[in-house]
Every structure is written in structure tokens, then in C-alpha cells.
Image 1 (cartoon, rainbow, N blue to C red):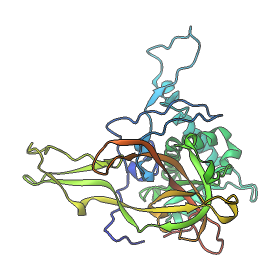
Image 2 (cartoon, helix red, strand yellow):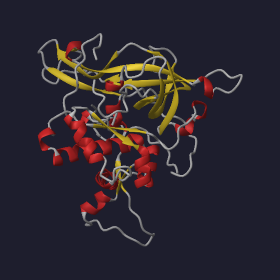
Image 3 (cartoon, rainbow, N blue to C red):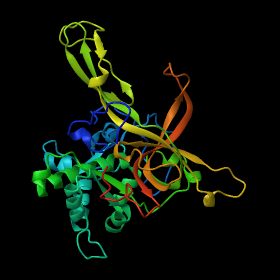
Image 4 (cartoon, helix red, strand yellow):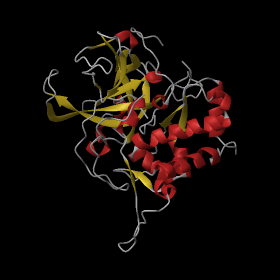
Length: 372
């Protein structure tokens, strides 16, 4: 797919996966300032909370939104933790701060699911064969049916729904490890991303509320509008006008952290951006509207703004009936475009992870062979 402006794909590395843990989720480096953690919440019930400030992020920026790892120490008040305890045991008990997600436990659970889940129709392992097919067809993503995950491991499915920005990157890392282990001749190719779809609960657009923010949701509707393909900057390239020293800066939450001083000649305010050396990703904005059969009588149809990145750009066209799976997010409105001051009101949108079309006579993003 061609864009109106030159677009460079990001180099292979941890940032190429769709991960949240510098899971790569969602080309990102750890943020200089940690994201404010959301309040702890139960997996069994939702507690409405104030949305966190966040700009639309590409899938491979999920890693920049992950929380810090802290040791999760259990036991009663009389139990003491020895300072000389084995570091491996401590790492195994580590969880992502603000969540119940243990990175090592989640990796072990997903590896077990990926290798041991058996397709009820064929009686054979499903996902190892699917990964081989994806690699042979040179497709950069593998689709994960969430109903299969819910059937095999309900706890891991629950964590995926409530903490997608932490779990999806872990899935990507597991797929990369399996590829390097089982397909070493294909280990140098671009990383394969996991795209989740077929959630057990498909929400109505009218049911989306603040308690769904930062969770994975699935909605059905009709595409009514698609923007042009937009170049979304992933990293900026700067060059010193005095000594020609160059520096590459990753985008942090939609902001470019422009270097104020050249690291070579120490001259201040001498760095200029070189646009044709920057790296961009394709981006598209879609409007999804309720289908006519789901609109209550006498009501106006609801719409949801959706951001698609990378291979998901131009997958859906106006008029298509689709099922969107993605992460429900919120960002504050600015008073003016030239000021950083923000309103207390928030705009909501969905960062797309998967698009499933209702049309069956052509390939869609849900097909493992749908290469572009």
C-alpha cells in the first residue's frame, strides 16, 4: 500500500512488535517519565475511574505504556523475606506495577496454550501449524481467537481483556521466541505480531463507558468514513547545523523531545530536524456507526472514532460491516492547539488490534493469508 509521503519501516528490534512491554505492543523506547498508574481494580468487577491522559498511540508503542515491575511478596505478617533470597524466585514473583500481571507466569501460560491447544474439529495442534503457514506466506501477523484462549485458560483471557497493553506485548515476545526456536532460518525476518479477535463479549457502542477505558473491547458497526493515509512519525532524526552530528529521538506520547544541546560540539539550539530521515508509520482514522438494525427506535445512531495503523490501514472501506477489536482509550481536549493546557473533558477512541469483515467472499484482516 502506497502513501502520499515517503514512509520508512522501522528497523527490526524490540520496538517492531506490537507490545506494551518494551514489548516491543502497539518501535518504542522506555519513557523518560513513568506513566501515572491507574488505581488498582478487581478483575471481577469494574470501578469507574478518571481517564488517564493519553494520545492516540500506534500498536508498537504499547511498550512505552507498560508499568514498572515490582516484586509481589506474599505471606502473613510474621513471614520475613531474606535479603539473600534467590533472585530467580524474586523475578518469578514480579508483577507489573498496578496490575496482577506476572510477566513470567503469563509467558509460561501463553507458551503452554500455544503449543498444547487442540482444534476440536481436526484433533491437532492449531497454532504451531498456523505460525508455520504465516511464516511461509510472509505475513507479519498471526490471529489469536480469544474464545480458544478463554476455553483453555480463563485467567489469562481475563488478564488479556483487562490489561491488553501489558499482555499483548508478552504474547509477541513469546511468538518471537518460538520462531527463533522452531524456525531459526526465519528468525531474521520482521517480527510477527499477535492480533486478538473474537472476544466472548461484543459491546454495543452505547454501552462503552469510563470503566472500559484501557481495556480490550469489541464492537460491531458500519464504516461510514475513512481518512486519507496519514504519515505518523515514529522517530525523529536531528542534525547539528554546526558539526553535522546526528541524533535519533523516539516519539514520546505524541511529543518530539527535541535535543536542546549538541552532544558533540555542545552548541545550544543547533539541532534541526531532517524529515526525510525520520521514520513514519501509516495511520488512518475511521468512523464506525451503529448498524440500522441495532439503533433503538427514535434514537440517532452512535459513532465511534477508530485509529488504524500499519497493515490495518485501508482494510475497511465505507459501507463495510465490521467487528472491531481494540483498546478503548481516552485523551483530554486541549484549550487551544498552541497551548498545553487541557480541558477536563476527554475524547474517546479505539486503537485497532483486529478488523473482521462480515463479507465472506474476499480476504479480510482476519484471514491469516491476507497479505498486502
